[in-house]
Length: 202
Image 1: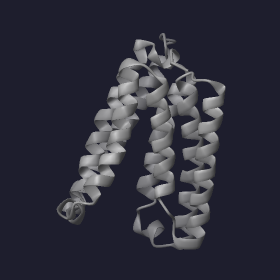
Image 2 (image 1 turned 135 degrees about the vertical axis):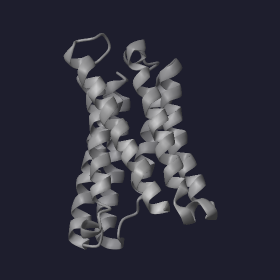
Image 3 (image 1 turned 180 degrees about the horizontal axis):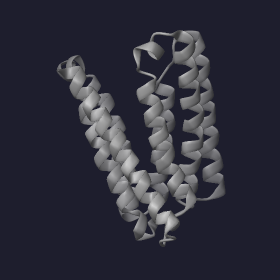
Image 4 (image 1 turned 90 degrees about the horizontal axis):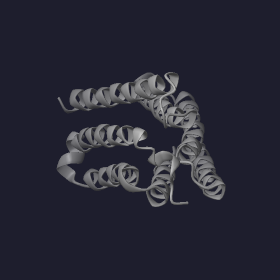
């Protein structure tokens, strides 16, 4: 029951990301104010990474070391592009984009190296998202800053909930995490038309 629930909430998260990506694409195609290619890339790459994240847990891939490492290497490379697009999407300073992308590149490279040495230290990828979401929350304003904070807290709370034996044993921490991501990512999408993405503090 727990496994099927986990798969279901994971599927719901994928559907939600696909929906948000389509809505951003529609806004971009219709040339609506405040929509641009970097915002579309931000949501689109999140969706693509989500799909790869589902595929990598298929037993045929998960239990084959070569396939497992190959897929996680692709995910790691996509994470670099995602975080670059994320920082570009909020129109922040070139130095912040460069520093953030550079840090993510180093962390993703270290993760890829760890894949082949010790099976993968996922905290490196988690750290990359934490750093970029923190930067986004700091340099943006109002509701957009709050949206990045919600995403940041979703990831931090997942770590906290994973330490609770009851939730971890039944994988409920993942279900809670999926719902938090659905909500926080929708809130992020809802801020696009506010124009805040193009008006950062730095």
